[in-house]
Length: 274
Image (tube, rainbow, N blue to C red; front, side, top):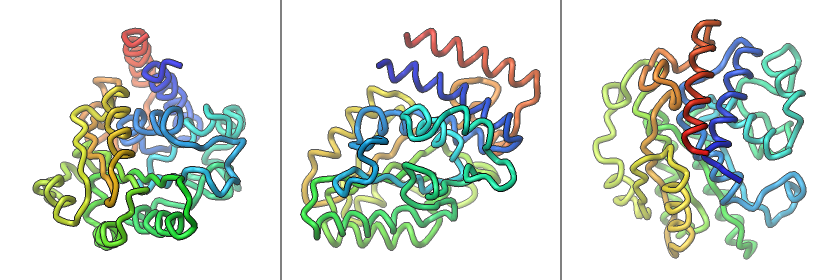
């Protein structure tokens, strides 16, 4: 399977989903897409067939506002029908709400209140160690989310317990709803910050490149005695110049003219990677 092309196919699905639901965090959906595709279609031992197995890999989308991309990936993986997703998303009484909902198959926990994903995954990873399991635990956080104090409590605990079965990813797209992340709450050197907490740090120069992500995740699997974090340098709104690197596309529904241009840009990018 060509995962690079799949990421653009799912970008189109995600924009269609946002249009149908009349809401969505489109910018972050686009920046995180390759990370989700690489995890679900290459890295993780998780599928509709084994989603109840105690030996499955576990995943939490801590930056739960990028749920539209997450739903699109889960539908493509077969956890629920794409047609049902597009029909019911963001409608009254639906299970397909605007943040991950664990009433849906394949979703481990409700998320969206930022700062919760990593601490919960620390508990999952610790439990896996206690039970002697070989499964792994993954979470994806936004760079703006790192201003939450609970993230650093979880970071400290993960290193203390030597949770080498835990891998976190920072979707570092440098923008959040109120502007540039460094202006809102400066991170300084994220690599040194995580290292100072005892983590193995892996830089992904292009976090929207499937090949680079594959190498980084494989490196994380080989590390023993400490948790790993991938600092994935991504582009908010990735795939269409209309949206890329623009904070205004944090939460937005494209109008007809914008939609036409965005889909045209996606098709061009998809053709380039086929």
